[in-house]
Image 1 (tube, rainbow, N blue to C red):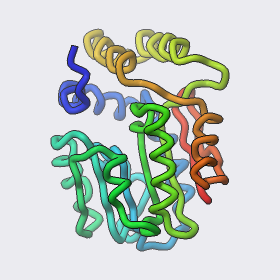
Image 2 (image 1 turned 90 degrees about the vertical axis):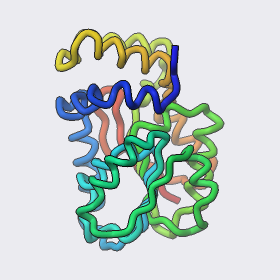
Image 3 (image 1 turned 45 degrees about the horizontal axis):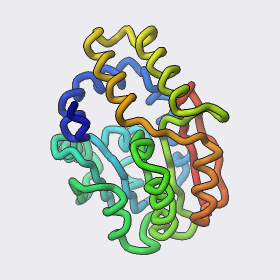
Image 4 (image 1 turned 90 degrees about the horizontal axis):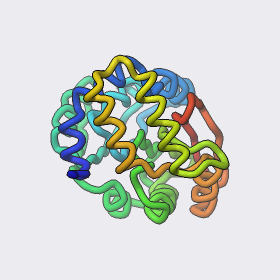
Amino acid sequence: MNTDPIYIFRKTWGTYQTVIKSNLMFHRETSTAVRTLFENRVGPLNVIDLGCGDAAHIGKILRPGQVGHYLGCDLSPYALDVARINLEPFGITVKLLCRDMIAVLREAPENHFDLVYSGFALHHLTAEGKQAFFTECRRVLRKNGCVILVDVMREEGTSRPEYLDGYNGAVASEWTALTSAERDQVQEHIRNCDFPETPTELQSLAHNAGLKNSRRLEKQTWHEAWCYQE
C-alpha cells in the first residue's frame, strides 16, 4: 500500500475538489470564521501557509491588499503548480516550497510573520511533530501575530480508533457526493494518515510553546478552526 503524501494527493485530487465543492469538510464555515477574524486587519501581512495545497483557501480568508509577503509549502509539486495560479490575483511575489512544513518553519526568519496558517495538515504529524510546529510558530511570529489552525480534531475523551470508526462511518453513510470508490479512497487515507489530537491536547502543546491564548473560531463535527496567540 502506497501511503506517500504526494502519491495520495495526485490520486485523490479530483475527489478532494468534490469534497470542497460539496462542503463535506465544512470548508465554507471554517473559512468564513477565519475571514471574520481578519476582515478589519490592516495589511500588508506576512503570511506563511504550511501544507498550503493549491492555496485556494487564502483568497477566501484574506483580501489581496492584506497580503504583503506569502510563503507556502506543500509536499506535492502538482498542488504548488495550481497554487501559483490561485495566488495570481494577490499581485505579489510568492515563494512556494516543495518541502516538509516543519523544515520550512525551522528555516524561516524569527519574528517575521503576522499569520501562520495551516489547514488540514497538522493531523498528519506525530505528537512530537505537532509540538515542534507550535514551538517554531511562536519563534517566527511577530508581536500580535497569530497561528490559525483549521483541522480535524478528536472529540474530548475519545481515542484514535474511536475517531477512525466515527469519521469513516460518516464518510460511508453521508458523503454521497462521492462514488463508492472515492469513499473507499478517503477511508483508506483516514486510516493510514489521520493522527488528530483533541482541542485540549493542542492547547497544551501551544501553551508549552508560549502561545497561551487560544480560542475556537468554528466547530463542525470533527472539523475545527482555532486561533493561538502569545
